[in-house]
Length: 248
Image 1 (cartoon, rainbow, N blue to C red):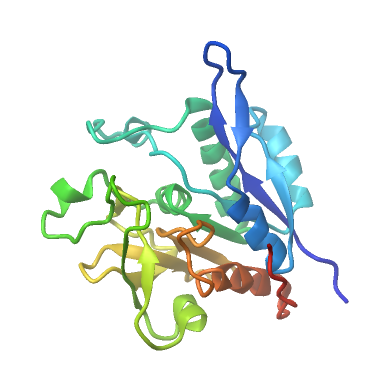
Image 2: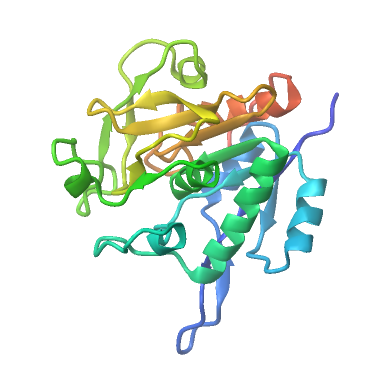
């Protein structure tokens, strides 16, 4: 039996506030999803030294880039928008450095939420900063009063999302106000929302396992079928169908 792949997970970061110490944290769904799919999760704090990041990636077989707060548009030459709530600068510094090296070496990556948006930016794509203004005819993609908000998903034939979901009606969780605008040339669309907003992407670079989802397969609002995305990612790394284990 082949050794299980080591899969890194970046973490969110909260600076110290009053009586609370600074901390890094990650939702359990990310490492539970990797474990259930046959990988070994490796938690990565927001490192500052680029040589350390390179050394760490040398030890890993793949990376899951997690979701979270918004990317700061000013870092890509755009004016800020009032609806943007940027992630902590320490996390974003690390995430951008991480994404740069993942893309340079075409390392296997599963990018979720803001992680997918950053992957697209790193490869030369752009973002809508606020769907309600940029795409006024779009369906709701975020409901502040309903964490279980869902919408339909239209998958592209022959792609990774079709392998995950097959036929039938598909609905996924939705909790974002930013989205991909121009898609980087390295990727192709794997799924859209009914309004055309890009909800999943995959690499079209030969040999590069790269999957991105705007929705969150790791969240408590995800379906059992959504978790198959982690399986598809591990299969892409190992070339073998893992023995899937349910996580309590």
